[in-house]
Length: 636
Image (tube, rainbow, N blue to C red; front, side, top):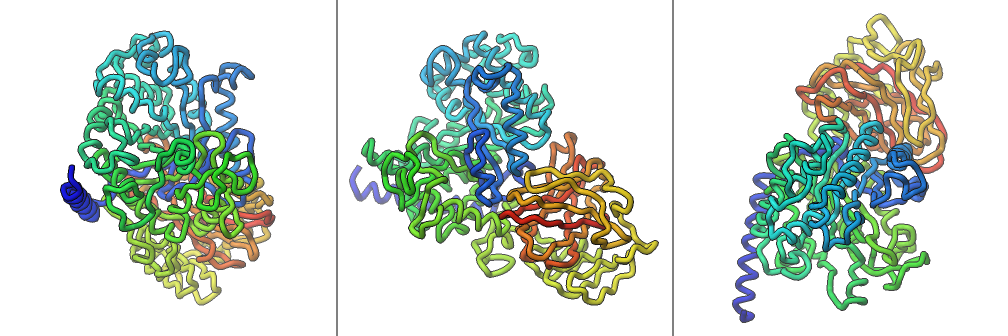
């Protein structure tokens, strides 16, 4: 191909992809956000069971992932074959305030060879019986745990199977033939192998588990993100989607599909490859980079096309931790040891929020950072040019500010400052527009609240509500409903006058709750929420709250002066019949008034189920602060 033809071809591809980006503006991101992600961009890390760096970092991380390799079911020979090691990881992770994420990586460790023998293992009925017995055990332990668990199924396996079967999803595999009763109705095919995860989740009843299918950028036979840069993306996406539809991306016998897609931008730091193998795996961070270049623009477009084609959102996993200040050497623990890369700088550097929004608009719901092999850069010693730990400092600032609300299906987020405030913040432009409705919901950007239920304005403006909600600036309250003095007009569903009414605390940051006379919004008592000096998340909640569909729940929340609370999130979690739908309203503490009662609200979606599985408030805290917050007069 001559240079002239090559340039013309590249220009055509660029125009084609830019046309697709224009179409994105019209159609928006596709597919629902699973409740486990709470409709905010999740940021998580790899961490071994038993380690506490994440907890001690004073960063409110969202998720904690760990590989489950062959042998996990009996703790690699150190325990009974009962999955208790998994249960411990789940409870330990939740206690520190994070969603547990399982990278289920067992198939390549099964007897009979490595990756090259993947298809051969699927044909072995005995291997498949033992393999899926372990999958079932994992799902049983997750169901008993009860909270959200994200299970990332076998990285690269379906890409390898597409190659080994010549893109034939009907190639033989011993699935029903394994003899497991739960799999009797599945086909004895490669497609049946992938469907077995969906079938076992249904059979066990582990509806709290989010299943993620791993997508490899080379699965079509072309390395689309590193080498085959002039190859049009959509035909390659279509080729892989066609193979994967029978594997659980399309309608199938289980009645369910995978919840999210999972991909890895790179498995090692870019300069590791440059220095040890002589290949260039660094992507251009330029926002004007051609879509036919080795760039984040091409990667975002590939993700977007997958999202548009399948209607599934993305989890980006095992993101390398190198930055431009690393020493390009094998990491043995010293400061700046490890290899250079720019992936943390792309998402958390100077243009970080613009880049995070771009990828959220491509369907990304989570960023999971971790080294894919030994000797690579690490978040424990990734010192930047300013001498500070790079990811910890920058991700911490992002998360402590409230993070980023994800676009709803059919919409996209505007650039920073493109909606809400113009301060370049993260939450405002992605926040659902609750300020102009009739529910009086609190606006996290502090704007005017025109609701009619009297929700307090966090900007301390005038409250003209009709339910008499107290203004945190102690100004005049023109309401005519319940008062703040415990009069007969008090309509609280939970007033905590005689007990905690079934409310309890969980998470490392909180101690047990109790009723107290120290503060009261209405009557003489409230619910004391003690913070014990551990940074991280804590949740106060009650089961079986009978909140009608579509109602707005208002909590009166006393924010103590000088606290290290950085955010609060009133939320509702529906049960199994609603597929564990989560509805939350994240509020940065900077928009609330300290030393006063604040109204914080969450509006349930139309068609929500009652009673709720859980109604509560989630808190984020940093530092070693000890003190007490208070809840009172919960109404709807």
